[in-house]
Image (cartoon, rainbow over all chains, first blue to last red; front, top):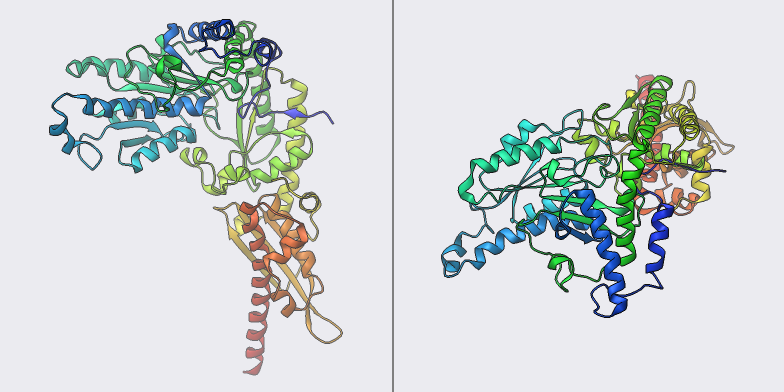
Amino acid sequence: MKKIYLDHAATTPVDKNVLKAMLPYFSGKFGNAMSIHSFGQEALEAKDKAREQLAVFFNCELSEVIFTSGATESNNLAIKGVLRSYYSKFYSLKGAKKAIMPQLPFNKTKIRPHIITSSFEHHCVLDTCKTLEKEGMADVTYLPVYKKGIIKIQDVKKAIRPETILISIMYVNNEIGTVQPIKEIGKLIREKKKEKKEEGELYPLFHTDATQAANYFDCDAEKLGIDLLSVSAHKIYGPKGVGALYVRKNTPIKRIQDGGDQEYKLRAGTHNVPGIVGLGKAVEQIRTQNSKGGSKKILDLRNHLIKRILTEIPKSHLNGSKENRSPNNANFRFDNVEGEGLVLSLDMEGIAVSTGSACSSGALDPSHVLLAIGLKPEQAHGSLRLTLGKNTTRKEIDMAVDKIKETVKRLRKISGSVLEEF
Amino acid sequence: MRYSKKVLDHFLRPRNQGTIKNPDAVVIIGNPKCGDLMKFYIKVGKNKQGEETIKEAKFETLGCGVAIATSSVATELAKGKTLSEMMEITCNDIIKELGELPKSKIHCSVLADKGLRKAIEAYRKKKSKKLNNKNF
């Protein structure tokens, strides 16, 4: 049975050219990029080439690219690192240390820094914010995302306080693929900063988690007006365990992992050279892919998928905005069907998809993303996410739709009308 | 954890799925918030010793694969058992029947045995009501 993979938001296969670029750096060219000798220099060269590739991608300087272990680390570094830098400034004021100490924002004083994020961020952002809130390190505002799954600029504007130090909004949602107005938020923040010049125009900083966006959307830091941007290699046909954080020059940020001097002292730990080489090649390939119209091809296929599901399966719905949506994402819900059962059934037919619900990953709570767009828990349990990739074919989509149709019918027969009668 | 072959078999080919016309008891159990809802139908008969038994048990379930598989196994276990025997069936018996289950999924099977007990209770209540009515 030929398998069909429609879960590219979870991870993507490593592209052949990416793998080819990486292979020499496992065993042959194994040096530590921090070593002075020729082995080290060879690794350093490879790493620097990747840094150049990332700098082209972000349209930034080389020193603004920080390699990490992936988007989770990038997001943690962005948020905790900014907060750490903010707090360190209090301690470093000479002589004033004692006078300031009692006011330090570890308790409920007014100078506790403020962070703005959205209510449907990936857990690595959401849980980081929640932890900081719990520890009394920061106040956090979670912006609503409404039925369409898109935040409103007006809400961002209203939420900004004098003590707001960071705004972290994801570029593309990982479950429903909706695109956030990053450029507009960037513009708004720039204007806000102009208003409060006396503060040195440092805050608020603007971070975006671009993990699901990098394949299809512009990640030009200048155009977006962004200070920090996270990407992950394995979502863009690169290897797992490597990612990057774009950090604008002069951004007040401190490292959160202590150790060596790697990555401009912002991320300690020996470089994952083959991984970094793979990430560099992967971002380079995005350009070629998109210039060949790859993104348009995926969009057409995805629209075909949505059209067929919504017209051929009764009581099926698309979750989130259809228009402002990543070209590879479709997220449906089917009345009287539970998502995990659907995923399990399809998997046995060789079709890999995922549920919006975290049920299958061990937690039984319905997806926070679907609840955030206003779905009831029982609706959120009935959802199915399909994410296309660059090698997805029309035939695969049609086969998947046929199987989904059959399975939904079967599961609906099993469930009868138990939900209505409850 | 991957599901056992038996779980997958009962999920793909559930036994006793459907409804019973003129059942002796019908109950719905579960919580749509957790994603699992089960409806059980039972028909009560008598064995040679004159004890009341589950003659037929059927289900309709909205829920994950394990919820469907446990509904299927629970109704299979129920058939032919006396009502008192059936009241003793626990979730462990259902899990044992299915092989192993992922820990986070155990709540589904807790639901199936509870559902059948609830059906028997409903039946007994209905019966005692009838008897009371007759006596008056």
